[in-house]
Image (cartoon, rainbow, N blue to C red):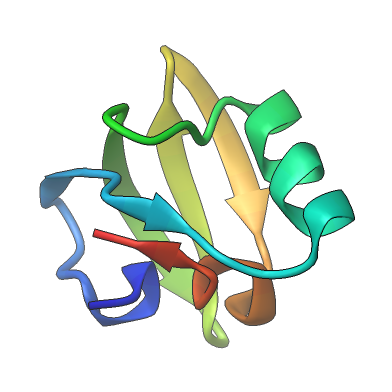
Length: 69
């Protein structure tokens, strides 16, 4: 399921990252890698604030929908 459907406060394992190669590379640079852990902190207007690799990152709903957990 996409990261956008995860519950707030939940920690998940990233199974797959979709999208165009440049989108996947951008997400990888932010710390979203297959097998990595991602913790949902909050959702504001569909956009997500997550903890990934001990960093807090805000991502858009479109980007979050490309991350499968």
